[in-house]
Length: 399
Figure (cartoon, rainbow, N blue to C red):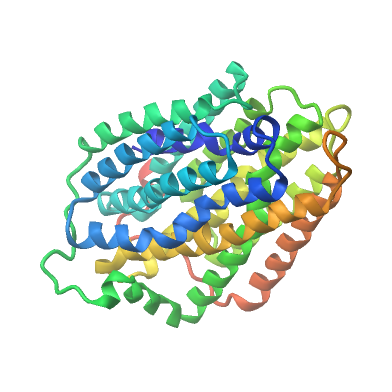
C-alpha cells in the first residue's frame, strides 16, 4: 500500500516544476501556483474524506475510489498546455490524491498494535519514491508529460490493490452527523493542548521553507548542469529509508521536542549547502544536501503523524490525521508554494530567453526561515513528551 501510494506521488511531484518551466514556459509565479494546488487540496479535502472514512465507508474502499478518479485527471493533464487548464486539472487531481496520505496512515495505525512500528511500514513508501525517481531519471523524461501518464497507470493499480487491504470499517458508524462533524471541528479540540498548539503552529510555518525545496530543487539542479538530477535526488529517499529503520530506536530514547529540533536544524543546513554548491567542485554539497533529507523529512513529518495519533481521541484519529494534513500539506505548503514562486521571480533578473536566477539568495532565505523555526521550538515547545506504545518495546523484540 505505502509503496504504490508513494510511487503515484513520486512520478510527477519532483519533476513538475521542470516540466512547467522548461516545456510549458510557465513563470515562477505560475509554477508556484500550480504546485500550490497540492496544498490547496489538502486544505479542503482531508476533513470531508476523514469524515466519510470515520462514518460511512471502509477506508480501503475510499482509497480505491479516490485513486480511480485521480487517474482520469492525471491523464487529462497531459492533454492541455495553458496555465488555466493545467491549474484546474491539477487541483481536481490533488483533491483526490492528498487525502490518501492521511488515510493510508490511519489504516496502518489501526491495524498495527504498536505505533512505533509505523516507520517500518512507511519506509516502503520511501522505497516506492526511490524506484520511480530512478526510472524517471534514467528515461530522461523530467521535462515531458510522461510522468503524469506513469502516475495515472500506477493510480489504477493502487485502486485495485486497495480492495485487498485489511477491512477497516468506519469507527463512528451509526452516530448522528452534525455540521461540526462535517467541518471536522471535533479535531480542533486537540489545539486546546498547549504543546500540540505550539506544534501545530510550527508545522504550518515549517512547511513554507520545505516547499521551496520541493518546488524548485529539480529545476535548479537541471539549470546548473547536474546530470540526471531526478535520479540523484532519490538519494534523499535512500537516506529516508535509513532514518525510517532507525526511528523506532530514536523514539525509545529521544523526546518529541528534540526530534523536531534535529529535523529543523538539518533543514537549515540543507539550504545552506544548496546555496553554495555547484555541479563541479561543489557537487559534494549537493549530495550532502540531498542525503540529509531523511532527517529533514522523517524527524518532522513522521514524528508529527505519530504525535498526532497519540494525542487524538480514538474515535477521531482519521479526522485528526486530516487536521495534521490540513495544517502541513494544506495551509503551510499552500503559503510556501505561492511564496516560493514569488521568491524565484524576486531573485530573477532579465527577460526570456536571457533570464538569470540568483539561486544563492533564494536558498539562503529558506535557511534563515528554518533556523528561526528551530529557535521557536527550542523556546516554546515544552515538556519531554515521548512517542508511547502500549505494546512490548520494539527494540527489545528485535534484540
